[in-house]
Amino acid sequence: MPESIPQLPASFYAEIENLSDSEIATTALWPFVEGSLTREELQTIVSETLSFPTPVKHIYGDVHVLELFHGPTMAFKDVGARFMSRCLSHFVEKGSETTVLVATSGDTGSAVAHGFANVEGIKVKILFPKGKVSPFQEYQMTSLGGNIQALEVDGTFDDCQALVKQAFSDSNLNEQVQLSSANSINVARFLPQMTYYFLAYKQLKKTLSGKKLIVSVPSGNFGNLTAGLIAKRMGLPIHQFVAANNSNDTFYQYLTTGHYTPKKSVATYSNAMDVGAPSNFERIEFLYDKNLASIKSDILGFTFTNKQTLDEIQQIYNLHEYVLDPHGAVGHAGLKAHLQENEVGLFLETAHPKKFESVVKQALPSYPIHDVNLKGCSKISMNNSYAEFVNHILTP
Image 1: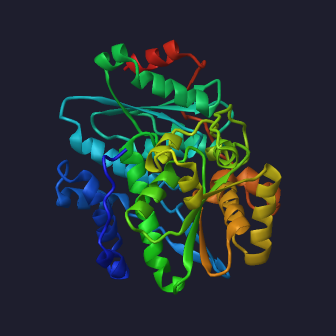
Image 2 (image 1 turned 60 degrees about the vertical axis):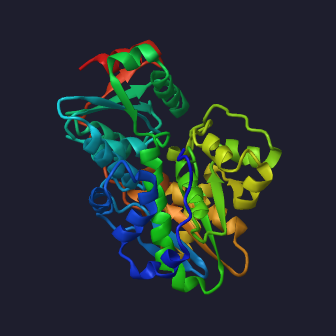
């Protein structure tokens, strides 16, 4: 976590619609990197990161969607992965080598693979759960080769994440190789994700007209939501967040019962959210001094089944001719369950529906399916074994 979270001046929010996206993101991130980068260096990294749009689109009434799928891998994680890869490249000394470890339930691996492809001095090891990512996601992770190695683990995302965490706490391993993470446990991965909340506010500001802004975030490992909470703490006028869960409802149960009980993740149609032990829960607790009442005042929780996810995709298309991916469908369902009068709602469409064609097609039979050819792609299958994982880390 950052040691402190600054308040941005009221003048920044008063003038935000007159600033460029790059200026907004640089201003938001500058307090966290001052002393490590010059403002000019940060501006260059931000410009390269935000090289694609993050548009807000009106769906109906007071409901809007923030499309975060216009990057190279068609998922919101392109922002964090691109920012982090450029930061790491900036700091890696010539002639040295850093190994980036990343566990993924689908989209993180894709974004990290493309963000770090061919970056000098960086090797990437991506762990993904066998049979639990879409063919398109697998293609994006396994088709690059070079410095990107995909490891297919016989287990769940939580198993992959546990292996990565164990590696970071292994002092013997860390003496042999320089490790870094590209999951949202890495502050350089999740902090830049707050920038698109600022960019969304810029686009919605005139629409608000005194109404409160509610933001619904499809939530799995909770890095995206935590980034939004930090933006709110910096003064961004978001009234409340909705944490929209699929059947992996650990956080929802925490809000309901007051007890945090991690559990085994279960496979759902919104697979990037299939997390039973979200890493960023500790960050949320830290932000609110473990005060449940304060957390509940800022975050509302909802949970939705696979059937409700399909129903949401079908209904939004039939009524408004907008195609949701399964994660955006959960986000919209959470927003719809909460939104009151005198509120403007924004939900995050975190991936393009193309990445989840087989799911979307169940809801919309006319939706086209594109064959994914994995021929020539490279992956290594492994057991859920730490010793085996270490061997892959140490293998050139």
